[in-house]
Image (cartoon, rainbow, N blue to C red; front, side, top):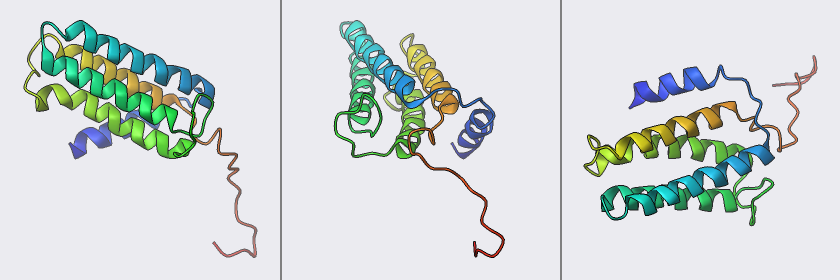
Length: 144
């Protein structure tokens, strides 16, 4: 898992940071809606996949609602922390099919596709955009 994490970080660190907080919020809700819809779609044929999709969708909605960005309702999580949660959610989404025993079934490919989309969105998001943080070099006589 550590190798996968390092590989993901190596790829996402190189992506251009073009997604701003408002766009990220819209993509979060689209992703959540997609996962919840997949849960409904899988309900009759694979309960484990359905429950996993709904859990991922629900966690995505909860994170979005609690983030301090446009689209958030109760700003409990700062946007930078939201990015770290998103990275973890992408990993969870990718591994849930294997963990729940349907990793070799047709439904697993939807989870892996969703995880890839989450990874790309997270990698292309500028998580410093809403924080107002400006990175400055220390002054010559200022201690680091």
